[in-house]
Length: 379
Image (cartoon, rainbow, N blue to C red; front, side):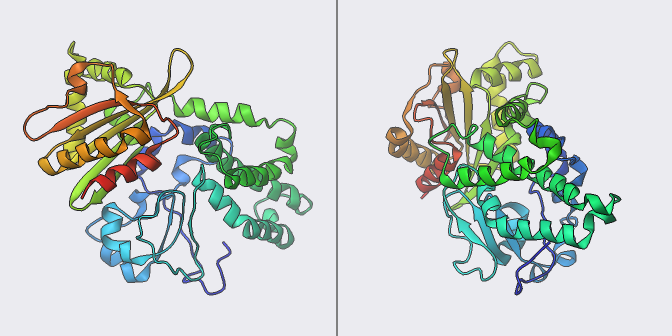
């Protein structure tokens, strides 16, 4: 809405880097949308881009430039066409070195924070305030059907809705700012700014409670019971091409034994281990992966946060990388032998494969750390 003076275009289009159908896999999206008067159909997704056969002509690379948000390397079909057109980034993952060091008027922000949204909110503060002020003075609210005298109130309502979107992301990523291993000053600064926007809105200021809001969104995020196992695995999935090997990682908010039972129910099989492994193998083969990792988070019966890691390598090169990862990362991640089903944890799969499951006792390390360690092991 307010590009820099020398920006490459006056039009910035936010594209959610998933198909439209995947929005339904994210119940936390739907939970926060209701707070911000947004519907899933309002998002621009991969489905809104031209068909793959036409995309290089209808959206020619030379006519575009891309700013990456919450990742710093463009992968998949977009990466094949537009990786050379990346012109900026705001991200909190390890720098993969794919974004130019000099990005001119566009941001190049790759810094540690609990949530990427914190970096975005802090970067946009001055522009956001200017846009809000401009909307009041220009009568933009009046153009939407409100009385002219209510301009300021309408803009405050708009600001609060956007602030709730940002707040939800930061609170979930930092466990309501209680995760000391993730929360940074970026996150605390962003929360302070966003909550100030909410407190300026008369309709929300008296009823808003941060903890209640967080609990609502976080509970929705963990509600995956209605999803099929295949959808659970792809709900929070990322993929990398590293030195000729394809690595995929799924993050899931339930324990492996829960996923085993779901696999057995879907396959109507008593052998839940076999059904579970068959589902993982099919998921990996469909994506032509050489190495697949499943990371889970859950709460133990004692109320402690815990993590599991399943690693499956499907060819000799991937097996070598997997064993290198295991040797190099055990101490840092606190990897301990998993005490679940032996057939799932069996390290000798045959046919040039290798599989291992661990408890990850150093629970402060999420996929943001595990993924770089896996990629480093792929030589």
